Amino acid sequence: MYKSFIYAVILFLNISGFTALAQVNDELPKRSDNLEVLSHVPLGAPLSVTDIVIEQELSRPYAYVGRMQAEKGFDIIDLSNPEKAEVIYRWRMPNEELHVGLGGMDPKYFKHKNRYYVVQSLQFFQGGPNTDAGAVVVDVTGLPDVSKVKTVGYVRNAEHPGGFHNIFMYKHSDGRPLLFATTSGDDAYVYDLGKFVEGKEDILAGTIPNPDTPARMAGASLGYHDFYVGYHPDSQQDRFYGGGAGGYFVFDVTEMDSVSLLASVTGVSGVVWGHTVTPSPDGRYIVGETEYMHAPLRIFDLKPALDGDVQNISDPISSWNFDYENLVHNHEVRWPYLFVSGYEDGLLVVDLFSPDEPKTVAYYDTFLGKHQSGMCGDNTCNGAFGVDVRNEDGLIVVSDMGTGFWAFRLDDFQGWNGRGWGLPNISSAQNWDDGPTEN
Image (cartoon, rainbow, N blue to C red; front, side, top):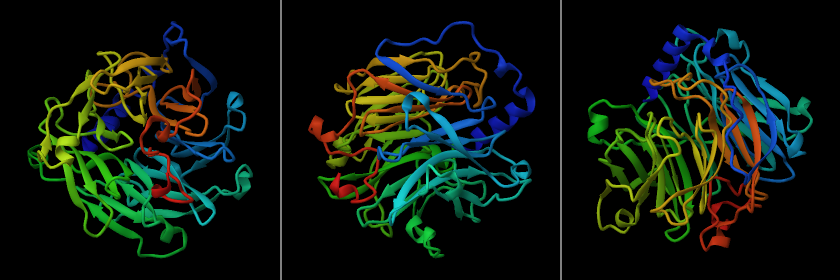
């Protein structure tokens, strides 16, 4: 899917251009009464907006939005007043017109030795420069003074050109800020960005293999598409959850030089490859997405595999979809809520309190384009691309491929801490000062 997605994007752009995307529906956005729009900031050309991340400290009210195609880089959104969000800085790839490919895909951020950095994944293809550049690291410590924004350098992988489609920044239990990255090869690559910003060269911390499933051996896809990394307090393990050829996989990555497979989810009806996967705070359940029209999110119970009763999970305990004619995309778990960027369906919030009976509890349609006017093989990849949640106060941010940046509040959701639900305080939000064992 990594390669087929790229080829589908290039084919669509060559054939269709942006003409159809400029047309919008006359209908007002569909919404539920329990979601309030705080801000909406258009960002530019259709199909130029990708993923989003928000800093977790209230003293640093910044979100970062990836930009591709017509705008290759990322935008910085100031949320000092969430009701008056504004773009304060646009980072663009130098000589971006010479670069071939998608551009900026997945932004993340990290803190190291009291400095703050954005990591923006990049994808550039043959025919232009920087095909080995997987991500750019930018120092944003001095915000809101944008004159102090400084490019540190590029994380490169010459062995697998084509960049990093997705990345994840993780504060490892050993204290290192680690970048987990997809490549055009089979393995996920892991880099020590503490060493990187200190100017050291030996930044490769390890690799994680995509297991040899029948689907991968049959050539269904190369490597991983997306992943999540989180601490598991009961086992005191750092765990990697990856979506790749054949399904979803859980690895123990506590020791990066000797990673081991803990559980697999393969042989699932309708899942040839895993796209995005996110666990519950205790690591028992995972939400898995696979990228094709009509596909639901599937919820799996990993307990039988993690307990050693079985080697593989092949059946979900439930599934969820908002509109059968569309395709849901990325998601964030703040148990019992699941926040979904649902492409043409916009922002969706799902109740997972009973994981075998997921229920839609809120929705807001950020997408204003025509049905099937986007990317991917069936052109359903358009609309709400990314979603993130600030745990301290519950602020929800969404990036829409056509309509730009959105900020929301959900009624009765003023913040999240796992302990309030009797669970570990574990989510994609990192404790950059003290590490995952203190969450």
